[in-house]
Length: 455
Image 1 (cartoon, rainbow, N blue to C red):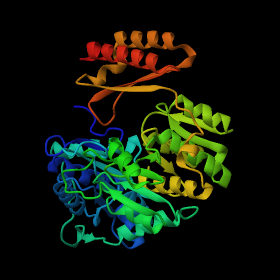
Image 2 (cartoon, rainbow, N blue to C red):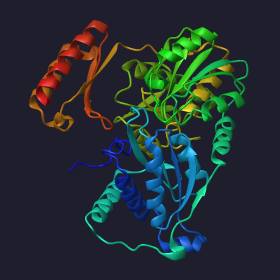
Image 3 (spheres, rainbow, N blue to C red):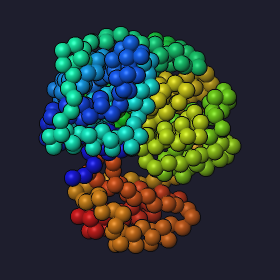
Image 4 (cartoon, one colour):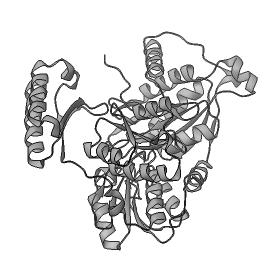
C-alpha cells in the first residue's frame, strides 16, 4: 500500500479513493498527533480547537461532515468557517490560536477529485514526519487498534465561525503597501473557494472589479476557468479594457495574471516583479528569492542581473516554504503561481499575490507588461505523460539514458527535468532550450521514452 500523503495532503477521487471513512479516520489520527497533551491544554483553560474549511465541491459537503465528526469524537472543538480559500484557513488557524487547521480541497484538480490538507498550529503545512505519524496512527486504528474515546462533556463541540470571511478580507487589504485605486481588474475565481473573497478584497482595495468565475454550484470548479484555463480571463480583459487580469485556482492558493494585451504573466514573472518591488521597499530579506527546479532559467538569469540571489528547492510550495523558514527569506514561489510572502502568509495565497501585483502596477504607474519584462522566458515545453507507472521513474535505466542523451544534445543552453507528479497519476517532462523547436523535439522524444519504459 502506497503512502497516503502526497506533496499537498491526501487527494483522490471523492467517494472512491477519498471516502467518508478515510476522512473520518484521518481526522481522528490528526487530532491525536497535532494537539498538545491534555495537561498542557488544561493549563491554557481550554480544549484543542481546529479550524475547518472547504472549497465548494459537492463532495466537500459530506467530507466536511466526516472530518468534523472525527475531530469532535476525538475531543477537539471545531470552528467551521465554510467555503474559504486554503490560505484563509491557514491564516485563521494562526490568528484564532487554533491547535490546527483542516482544508478540504483538491486545488486545481477536476471536480470529481477532493483532498484533505492539515495545518499545524500557526497555520503552517505539516512536515513529512508529522504526516507519517498521522498516517501510521490512521492505519493502526483501521486495523482495529483501540484508542481512548472521550465521552460526556469530553467530546468536542462544533461552532459555525461566520466571522472568518471578513477577518481574512481585512487582512488581505490591510497588508498591501498601497491602494490600487484607478485600476480596472478582471478577477477570475475559478468558481472556487475565492468566489466571494477575491472580488471583495480587490474592491475594498480600490479597484474597479470585473468578476468572472464567481458562481460556484458544486460542480463547475476549475471548469474552463481559473488559473488552469486562462482563455476566459484573457477575453474578459480585452472586452472590458482592463489594466490587468488575475486568475486563482479552485482553492485560491495560486495566482496567474494577464496584462492589458491579454498576454499571460506566469508565476516566475510575478516572483520577479515582486522580488524587485520588495527589494526596493527593503522587505526582501537577504536579497533572496526562493523558487523550484521548475522555474524558467530566464528567471534565474533575470534575478542575477538585478543583483538578487535565487535558492532552488524541489517542486511543491511546502518545500519552498521550508527553505524560506530555514533561511529566513521573505519571498518564494513556483512557476505555477504558488507565491508565498512570508511576512503576511504561511502558504501560497492567490488573492494576496494578485493584490500585491496590482499594488506594484498602481505604485509605479507602469503597465504590467513592462514590469513583467524584467525577465525573458526561455522556450520551455512541459508534457504530462499519463497512464504510466510514475513510481518507476527513478529506477528506469532506459529513462536515465534518454535523459542523459537529451542533456548532451542541449548542452549549456538548456536543461531537462523529469519527475512524477505528487498530486496526479502522471509523469511530467520539462525541457528548456534556447530554441523553441529544439525544446519541443527533445521533450516529445523524452515523452515517448516515458511511455515505452513506464507504460
